Length: 303
Image (tube, rainbow, N blue to C red; front, side, top):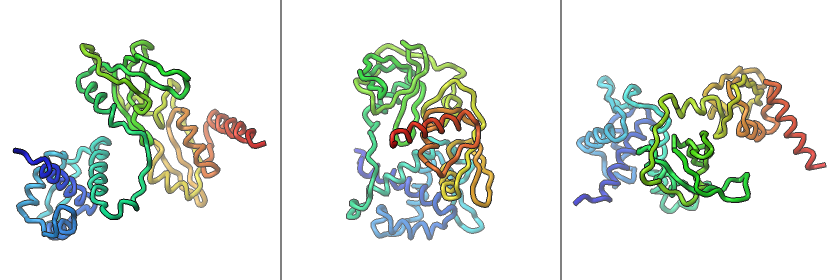
């Protein structure tokens, strides 16, 4: 009989091994053994060489990585050519590593402060299952822009996306005959429609769909060359977490200028305004006018 507790601990051990090697870059088995001894999985005992190689082989299969050894230094490292590096793969590995760490907080749990965000665990499995089968889903939806809940929405789910810790499903709305976006936390009565299926368009790419956009809202407008002047403190955050993959920086003595190729959307406008006076739109004039008008309306509220 399979012991589910032992299986779960083994998987957590694989994650620990990969995450530790990634964090150190290159590490000897001796150092790994010392760290294992201090970890929740070592029980105060060193990591046996046989166990290491068992976990190494299992981790390579489960997490799609290659753990290589430099024979000149006897250091282990994650081979770049063996790591897929996809955003999903990175996100899953990071999430599992964080979950593993938080599971062992023990008597300092009151010192770990988490953000309260709407959960997607109720609807996400149904949507992922539908995507695997190219199945159709039906649900009710409470939009923030409408007073009444919309019932009986029929959607062909193309893909899911997470933005600012909220999950969204993007797909083809059969009634409206267009691709639309829905937040999972505003859905209810979600089911997989029996006997219904669809075919993904051959030329559709989720990455291309949002390629020129910041956030979850898109439009049919052309991408613009957007230029932002950013103060030196805020520029550090922009470097650490770029707004968009097209981000390019010009470094000046007292500020930075960031260049982008993006569509002007609601999410982009809100993001720029959230930084206040630390970010100034230099180009295009269209975006400058939008920001100026929004600021004027805000100031009018405080007269």
